[in-house]
Length: 145
Image (spheres, rainbow, N blue to C red):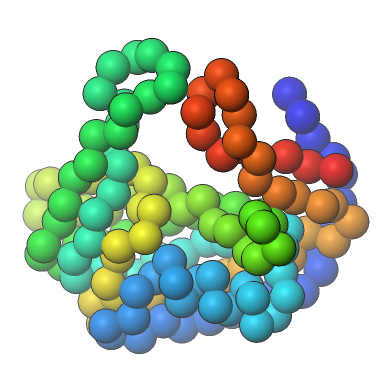
């Protein structure tokens, strides 16, 4: 385990509107507010997008299973904000549902807002969070100083 204690800095309450891409919009908000260490919560709906819904096999490095969705899904998600190459980087995991279909996974870039997504972003003061390449997993993992 790797950790560092901090405190809550800025608290942002945001609304993302129909047609916006949620990942770039979250990144823009964090960049505008200069948040490079933080946590966020969101809920609303996405119209279409793509997410990683698990690894193909239980091995390292993992090969992702990509799942596309092209119909609106309700979404509840959470994630972290860390610095990567001098800019904010987010890691967003979400559960989404439409009727009896449920998808859970990592939305890496494609996720178009349907109607609205509301978010709470908490800056973590006193912690320097970054994403660093991990040789064993092949992933960019959270690092805290």
